[in-house]
Length: 499
Image 1 (tube, one colour):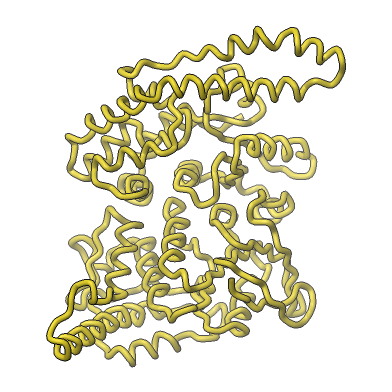
Image 2 (tube, helix red, strand yellow; image 1 turned 90 degrees about the vertical axis):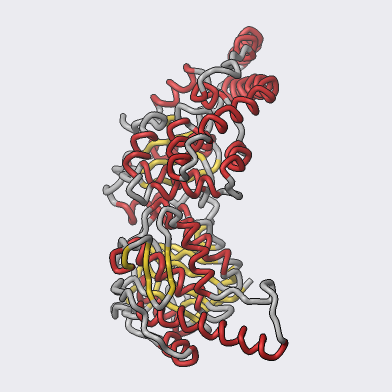
């Protein structure tokens, strides 16, 4: 827990906010966000502010510089600069990265000269090596090479990287090079980054720098509602050198008036089942890029959010929809929900998207392990067959629980209650009858019926992936030349949101 100084809302002076991990500041254009970032840099220490205005020019050949000089110049560059002044420190970031490793190598040689030897376990990991490690998790389709004073991606110059890749290398390097216990102030953390990887990148950097505090400043509601945060602050206005701001519970759906101010009529809203920052939500954000995708948690919360904003449509002009897992619902229930603007995917749950045969084939082809596709599909069928009886029970219980809740919730009188009692048993008999596909059915049919949130992690060992490695690779395709092919596959399983 760290105390962060922030200007008081609507009055002069500062106050302390206790931040466990990170803080997201969200506000419309013109609300004074960047000025607030500059102010936070001035009244807190130690800080590192990364401006939204930054040059992405890098040189393939990195100049040599001793560690002390490189570190000092990077630390002092653009300290307390004007919020509108662009940062042009990319070359110095890379110089510092190479200089830090050279210093590490010198220290290792000195240790060997003193002790006579040093084990691999005793050799500290350089920041450059850590940068490559994070890069490989976020951009697994592109090999980063930082060697012989050169920056290369695959077999071409680093100068030819995309803007997203350049900013990725810049941000990873800046964060990992910073001093201990630093307070990072990142203006527009989503800039140049694809939706499929922006939250994943920042989550990974927070994991690597758990000694630091991250303050994100954004007007992108997609980032604000999808990034897991300890605190969420809505910056409402800036006038007479004073900011008006309000703390919002980050675990609740962002208030309607924030939607209105932030989005106007630019994008319709899509409430989805799932949690902030989850890998599954990132698929929705990439696929439904013309919507503001807001994770709500449970399916009940999705229905509640859609119903709430639709009921008060006289207060706004936004189109509002919902999307959730099929989750054992019968056709009549799905049709009624769709009529109310709440859609469902064709599979039982969103996690199963990662295991449809077309995506399995894409992954195996990318890894040059095409022979593994049939083995993976056979393993899914084997796991399904072993658990089929449990699935039937879970489906029956789930359907009855949901049906009883809906029907009993509609009871408003004694007559309603009598009708409920008379009809319920025959209805429950029908709901309890669950017919599932055989274990040797087409894999897509099994995935339409099978709920198993840990299935991907069980399967990925077949192609030697560790935790979330398989999902991260699939998500990386969305920001690569495989994007359109993956989108075409997702079209087979995700609904078109229209009404």
